[in-house]
Length: 495
Image (cartoon, rainbow, N blue to C red; front, side):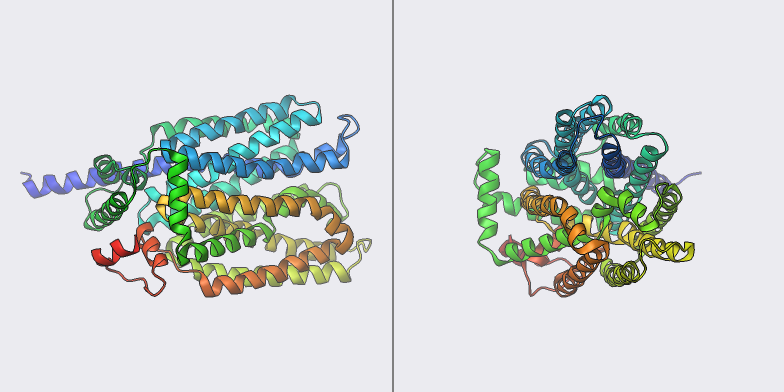
C-alpha cells in the first residue's frame, strides 16, 4: 500500500519531467530559429559564388554583388533596434515569431528574383529578421534555463544547431543550386514561427513588468519546486521589485528605455560592460567564420587550385557537426574561460602557421601533400572557430547585460558591430588585393591575440551563476562571486 510520502515523490518526479519538457520545447524552438539563421550564413557563400557565375545573365557588376552581400549585415542593426522596442512590450516569444516572417519572405524573393533590386531587398529583409531574432533566442534561452544548464542550452543554440544549419545550407547550395536551397530554407523558418507560440514566457521579463504572479507560475512550471530553484526565484522577485519601486511609472516604451540608459550611463560599470561586450563582438567577427561564410568557397578554390571543393566542404562540415555537439557537452562540465583562452591562442597560432605556408608555398606549386597541408590547417582553424570560439563569444553578452537594459545594450553593441562588419566586408576585397590571403590571415591573428589578452584580464566567469548574480556582481566591481546571495541592503544599493 502506497504511503503519502510515495505519492509526494511520484508527484515531484512527474513535475520534474513536465518542467524538463517545457524547457526542451523552448530550446528546440530557439534551436530551429538558430538553425534557420545559420542556414542563411551557409547559403550565402554559395549564393555569392553563384551570383559571380551568373552575373552576365543577371546583369550584375562586382560592385552590385558586394552590395547584395553587405546589405544583410547593414540592416541587422535595424532588426536589433526593432527587437529592443518590441521585446519591451511583448516579451521574448512573440518577437521570435515576428522576426522570422521577413526571413521567410526573403527566401521566396531569392528563389524568384531575377535582378539586383529584388536580391538587395531580400537581403535587407534577411538582415532585419536575423538582427531581431538572434538577441531574442539568446535572451529566451538564457532567461529560461537554470544556472546549471544555461551554458549547455546556450551551447546547443550557438554551436549544435548553428553548425548543422550552416552545413546544410552550404552543402545543399553546392549539391543542388542556390535557388533550390533557398526554397528548402523556408521549411525550418516556418517551424521557427510555430514552436514559440507554445512556449512559456521568460520569467525574468514577466518580473521586470511587475507581473510577479505570472513570473512565479512560469518559473515554477519551468524549474519546479526544488529549493535551489525557489532560491533563484526569490532573488529574481526581490531584485525586480526593488527596481520597479525605484522607477517612474512612464509607460512610453522609448522614453522608458532612454531613461534607463541615462541612469546606467551615469555609472562606471555600464561603460566597462560596453567596452567588454564590444571587444567580445569584434573579436567574434574577426575569428574567421564571417570571412569564411562570404568568401569561403573562393578562398578554398584559390588555396587548392580546384573549382570542385566539395570534398573539402564535406570534411569541414563533418568535423563541425561532430565537434559542435562535443563542445555542447564539454560546456556543461568545463568553465567558459578554461575553454575560451586555450582555443583562442591555438586558433591564432594556427592562422599564423597557415599564413606562413601560403606565403612560402606558391599557388602554382602542384603537390597534393602540400595542398592538403594548407587545407588541413585551414580546416582545423575553422573547426576551432565554429565549434568553440564563435558559439562562446556569441552567447556571452546575453549573460552579461542587466535585465532592464538587455535589449538596449544588444542594440548598441549590434550597431557598433554591424558598422564594423559592414566596413570589413566592403574593404575585404581590397585587403586581399593589397595583402594577399596570408596577409589578411596574419592581421586577423595578431588582432585576435590582442583582444584575447584584454578578455583574459576583464572577462568574468559566468558558469553556474544566475543571471541576477552575474548582474549584481558586475555592478559591484569589488565583489567576488560567492555561493550565497548578497544581503538585501547591498542588492538594493547596487540596483
